[in-house]
Image (cartoon, rainbow, N blue to C red; front, side, top):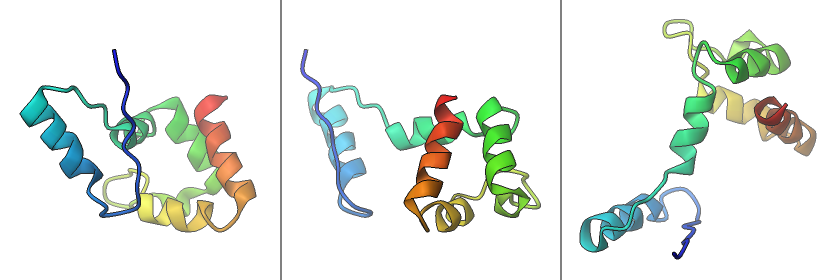
Length: 91
């Protein structure tokens, strides 16, 4: 079995390549971004940890879900905050 990792920046074609690998060659693909987003949906332990660490300002007032853009602005402002987010996933 082979494992292929698709990496690249925003809008670099990763999703398109993954779709083509699946459609043309039958290769199953796992979208790690999607899986990571599922882990911090409302009602999960990771959601609670992220809110505790980064505050309620990152929550969409209508949906009560974590706003990825708001979280990103906070988290990617420093390496320390990136590490805090990682700890929310793995502790």
